[in-house]
Image (cartoon, rainbow, N blue to C red; front, side, top):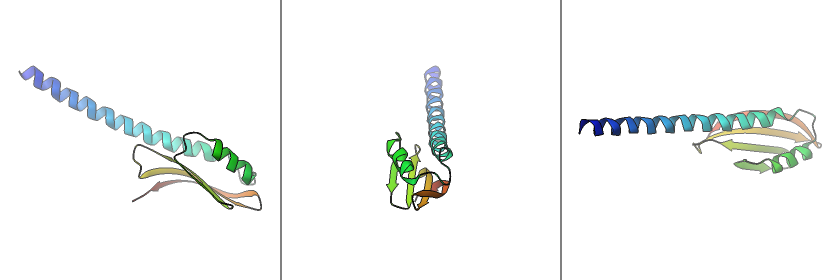
Amino acid sequence: MMQGKWIWIVSVFVLIGGLIISASVSEHNAEAKAKSFCAKIKTGDDFNATRELINSTAATDKLVNSDKRLSIMFSSYDPQSVYACEIIGADGKITALQYRHLEQE
């Protein structure tokens, strides 16, 4: 009877450990995707070409387009934790970009 209890306890710890590892990997992947996307873009690049790149990028969780601002966002296991690459443009060129970690409430 005692052996069954230990198997159950070990199983619970393995399950909890697996969930923690999975959450950590998910968070890291979302962060890496946003940073990688921002690294592809430079100030002075064509704003419309960047809009097309965003539209063709798979695995985006949220996409916001306007004439002067583009944001591509990747969320992790926690929908409140979002990693973003935000791009500002003027006169058809990128004037600024920023990688950000947004924690929504």
